[in-house]
Amino acid sequence: EIVLTQSPTTMAASPGEKVTLTCLASSSVNYMYWYQQKSSASPKLLIYYTSSLASGVPDRFSGSGSGTSYSLTISSMEAEDAAIYYCLQLTSTPLTFGSGTKLEIK
Amino acid sequence: EVQLQQSGAELGKPGTSVKLSCKVSGYNIRNTYMHWVNQRPGKGLEWIGRIDPANGNTIYAEKFKSKATLTADTSSNTAYMQLSQLKSDDTAIYFCAMWETPFAYWGQGTLVTVSS
Image 1 (cartoon, each protein chain N blue to C red):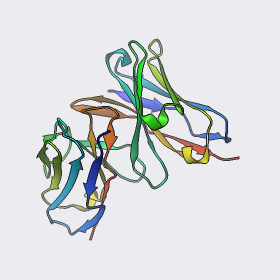
Image 2: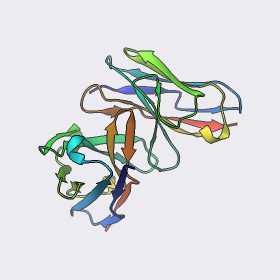
Image 3: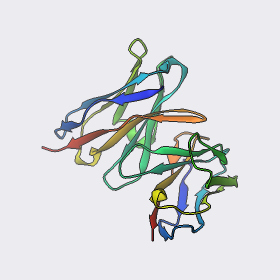
């Protein structure tokens, strides 16, 4: 099973601040996917194929990485970005999510 | 427009079973995998397994192999998940999802509460 480790677990950012979240995989994966979840609502896809922006997602979000190390960046934090962010690997079963990063607004 | 409509909240007693449904509109489930994910109170997302509705083939995460049973009815375009031998630890929101890159479609979630 591929374990995804996200860091930090929790963080707070000021409006306009640049935010970088990381996801480390225990084995190499082909791509990383990133989701945003608010409350217990259905997760929303932000990034697919590591760096492609999902439809309707603001371009302040971006993704990068390869192999075992991936990141999600918000170029300029906005209040509406306060949420929990999960990475997801679809390379091998069982599919696995990271444990999440809770991002708060200062 | 693709929509996944899940069945309503369930209250199950310990040791019993519940069966959740996920009706898909706007897409033929024969052409995709249907995934199920859970989220325990205050916890993260956990993949349970997936079914290929075209042939009924399933893959489960190890910890759910004796807990969840995934089925699908292509005639009604609906996926199902049965949870058996319910325990308090099964209390969670259960989501169905279709991941057709570059799109990802999720149901609204079904809350299952296990309590005597």
